[in-house]
Each structure stands twice: as structure tokens, then as C-alpha cells.
Amino acid sequence: MTQSNTYIGLDVGERRIGIARGDTGVKIAVGLETIQVDGHEVERLKQIIDLERPLAIVIGRPRNQSGETTGQTRAVELFSERLTRLGVPIVFQDESLTSVLAEQQLQCSGKPYTRGDIDARAACLILTDFLETHS
Image (cartoon, rainbow, N blue to C red; front, side, top):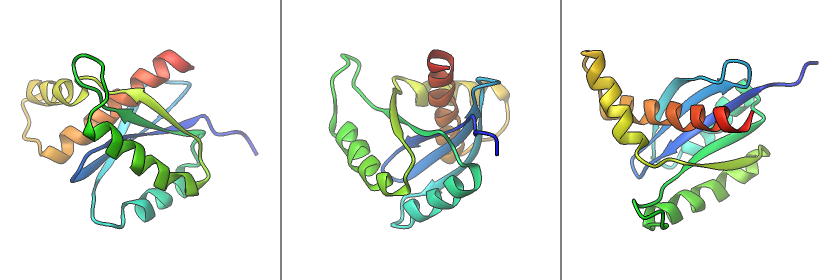
């Protein structure tokens, strides 16, 4: 069996989690989906992990514009602790301004988009940044 070169990227928010998939060969991530934070998000992520078999889960780590941690940083860290039971290594990637950039990219496409689309695109940006610097 060949080793996976896949990574899963997450943009974790209070209401939604954007999910992306990328691999070390292409170094570009694609959005998979956005899931609601409803108490079942870890179970849904387990399904994705079981299907994709990633080397690691890359989670966007929020910080303010001064680079300091925020309340959302702690919320993301607590969520990541819940993911440790999935048995996949977890790494953090700076997510500074990814949601802003994601929305700008979607606006430029000229097509309608939702808040969930922004979250999935932000997950792509987080994962692409990771792939470009770590593989």
C-alpha cells in the first residue's frame, strides 16, 4: 500500500468549519465542504478522515493583527484537542487574513457565494500556505 500524501485543512469558526483537501504533489488545495458546528462536527470530520486518510490535519490558527492570540485562538485549540481522538497528527498554520482574501477571491469570480463558500475557500488558503512551506 502506498503512503498517502494528502492533507486536510480546516478553517474553524464558531458556526461553520470550512474543509479543504490538498496533497504534496500539487501543493494546491481544493474545497471539500463546509459543515455546521452543531455537536456532530467531529463525527463528520471522522468520516472525511476515514475516506481521505491524510498525513495530518492542518488547522488555521487565528491571531490578531499584532500576532497575538485571541479568544478564537483558544476556541480553535480546544476544538483541536477534540480531534486528537481521530488518530491523525494535527498541525497549526497561521490563518491571518485568509477569510478576507477568500471573500475577495469569491467577489472577483463574479458568481454568487455564501458564508460557507468563504469558509471553504479560507480552508483552501490555509492548506495551500502550509503545503507551499512544508513540503
